[in-house]
Every structure is written in C-alpha cells, then in structure tokens.
Amino acid sequence: MRVLGLMSGTSADGIDVALVGVRGRGTGLRAHLERFCTIPYPAAVRRAVLRVANANRQSMLSIAEISQLNFLLGELYAEAVRRACRRFRVSLKRIQLIGCHGQTVYHQPVRRVFAGRPVASTLQLGEAQVLAERTGRPVVANFRPRDMAAGGQGAPLVPYVDHLLYRHPRRGRVALNIGGIANLTVIPARARSHQVIAFDTGPGNMVIDAVVEAVTHGRRTFDRNGTLAARGRVLAPLLRRLLKNPYFRGRPPKSTGREQFGRAYAHRFLSRAGGASAEDKVRTATELTVASITGAFKRFVLPRARINDVILGGGGARNAFLVRRLRESLPGLRLIPAGRLGVDEKAKEAFAFAVLAYRTWRGEPATLPSATGARRGVVLGTIVPGQP
Image 1: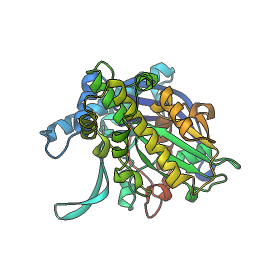
Image 2 (image 1 turned 180 degrees about the horizontal axis):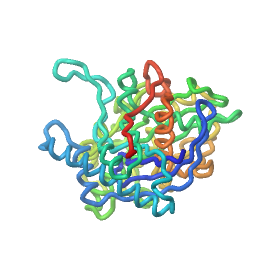
Image 3 (image 1 turned 120 degrees about the vertical axis):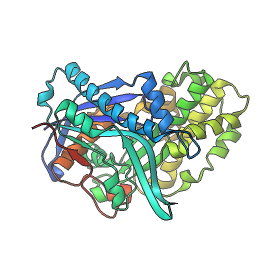
Image 4 (image 1 turned 90 degrees about the horizontal axis):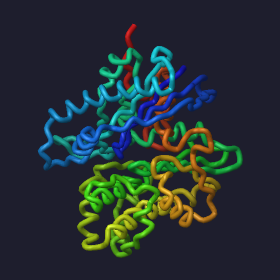
C-alpha cells in the first residue's frame, strides 16, 4: 500500500506529511519513505492550537473553541494532503490509506479522580471524518485511546516503528526523538519486541521555544541552531531546582506533555530566572533538556542495556548546540542523525503513523506493552471509510 502519514506535534508548527510504501504482515512488514514535506500552520491557527493545549482549569476557554478547532484542523489536514500530493507529483487516487495522528491538546495518562471516579484520558483534535470526506481516502485516526483502555499510557507509540527500523544484530541502540517533548526507545542488540523499553524523558524543544518567544517578544519562535543558547551561561541554581521535578525520577513507563511542561511551566521558569539575560535564560532552558535526557540515560537506560548508538530525530536534532551538548554529556556513544539510516529525522513520526495505520488496516496490533505499560498489545485507532 501507499500510505500518507500525517503528524502535527506538540510544537504546533505545522503538519508533517510522509508518503510511505508499506508491504508485508507481522514480522515480515517492510516500509520505506518515498517523500516528505511540512505544511506550516497559519499563524492564527498555531495560536489557537497553543491556546487550547495550554488551557487550564481556570481558563475561559469555551467548548465552542475546541469544537471549531477540531473541524478546522480536519480541513487543514485535507488541504495538507492535497498540497503534498501535488508536491510529490502523486495522484490522490494512488493513495490507498491516510494515517492521521491529530493534534494533541490534552494528555493525562495517569488516572485522577474526576466526578468521583478515577479517569485517564487523552484528546487529539482534527476531525477524521472531514479528512475522509474531503480526500475520499480511508483514514485511520485516534490512535492513543485503545492502548489507554488496555491499561497503557497511550504513549509512546512510535517505538514499534523504531524497533522495525533500527534493530541490529550486534549494536545496542537508542532512538532519541527531540520534539516538543523528548522521548527515547531502547533497542538492545538482537532485541525482540518485548525487550524494547520506551518513555518520555521530559521537555524537548517545548520550554526552549517558549522562552525564546518570550525573550524576543515574539520575533523568534525557536532558537535556530542554538545560537542564543551558545552565547549564554547556565543559571546553575535554577537548573538544579528544575531538575528536582518528580517526573524526571519517576520510573518508566511514563509519558508527559504540555500539562506538565507547557506555558504555565515556562512562565514559572521565566519568573525564577528574574533579570538574567535573554541568552542565559535560553541556555538554561536548553541545558534542562540536555540534563533531563542524559539523566534518563544514566538512571533507566545504561544500567539495563549495552548501548552503542543514539539515533537522533525530531526538530531538536537540527539544533547544533543542543546536539553538541548531548554529545559532550554522553561520552562513548555514537550520535547518528536518523536520516543516515533511511528516514529523515524530521519525517520519522509522520512515517511512523503511516506504518501504524497500515497495521490497523490489516487488523494487527502495533503497540509495545513494554513501552506503554498496557496489559496487552492492541489494534490501534478508528477507521473512517473513504468514498466508495
């Protein structure tokens, strides 16, 4: 099958579209990336996404805004599909399936009491029925809830594809994705699927981006190549305080998002940084990402597996200063951009949801319970038929 994978991550900068060729079943499944592009969100849409995703219990956000954004994102995903097909020079009729992750606006993987009952939940917006109607193609969406219903955290889901792509007979590997949130997948040499562990380490680009936007008064939305951070100094007392967050010491399986490291967290960060220079604030936010990732390696990865390679993906893999600091903090490990192993580092998540959609279409499970904590592997998502 030729499958389009759509992904819009926690950074909310746009829609990643991957055209993927997939064949086979079970352990014989094979997939390759044919083309990839990113369709940026309009500025007003990005503001709306972040407003909803950063909302808290005291916000004045209305149900109407959430409903409107859900349908608007469905339309934007359909536009992204059409634009990507034109860019790839592929007829939409030749696309047999679309896998759409949607835009996460809420993720609470641990049960908390609500209306007198313990509940865990997740919410991804982007109405799949709008996408199916506009494109005529069948759509698989709403991937995370079934894993949560089976006792998992609904995340991370990409480790199934990491294992498919990066398993090696002699080298232990970690696939490290630095998106808005950073997450890793540990793949020991010759690992079978039940031996893979994966979890979110904490903030990736999320806090860095929020700090950059604040200190530049909106002129920049991210620290290109880490140039601001490279000119700053670490606010060491603040960093030590931030690293005491209980999330970093919590044992896997675990996952997180804007609920813990979103706008409210960035506001507290900036308040505690006081009158420090803009560069020092960005450097400290960057070092928070580096320290939380390397702390996860030292606590939960290196004691359990012999690791040779770290395969870097996500937008953070293009932050030269961040990558340099990771290399310095993880001596003895070889850092490899994911693109060298067949899938561009920015395309990996969109690629993954194309593969997961294919598995769902075939009625096959595509989760790793060792990564999500679920009781069993499950078939993911909701299938929306295309036009006959």
